[in-house]
Length: 219
Ligand code: CDP
Image (cartoon, rainbow, N blue to C red; front, side, top):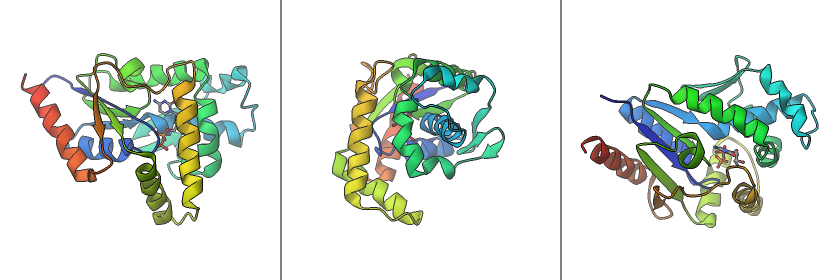
């Protein structure tokens, strides 16, 4: 069978990563969470105290190694899947990912990772920039209260105590930054299907997208 590329984009907390991971697992394809890659860059930048506002300081990307395998993200071979979810990373990742130099580096890695394999890749610019010829493009949305509720439940499960209002605020601020940046802003590709998941369960979303994939495969 020919390789198949699924691009899943959408705002913060819309369930992209969970849904993409489950679809890839069911189909035995590769899942790539591009948000985790931008988070790993942010983690390195914070740990090494570079000036986050100075694009030229991101040259460290020439020297470090970022890879995503089996739903885990590695920074120079070290698994940082938990560290990239810290509040400090979350608060700075939209700034870090707004720099064209950082985006070029990550997009190159992402394009390469998708070469010759079937992938489900999720992020903000997958259907528009990274995989413009994807076989299926989905734009996942849900209203902000529902997205905050999901993120809040995730945080509680990880033992992170926060106020729901802070979670709502984080989502609103990040969506605004991601949608209004100059370089590759979050937006629905013209040929993407918009799926509002506010009143859908995870299984319903996964099954719906798998049906869409099967339909396309049989064309
Ligand atoms: O928190 P959530 O899972 O919704 O976000 P994420 O997918 O982990 O992405 C974190 C941040 O990385 C986003 O808020 C964007 O600023 C940035 N990002 C991006 O610019 N382009 C992508 N393809 C993926 C993420």
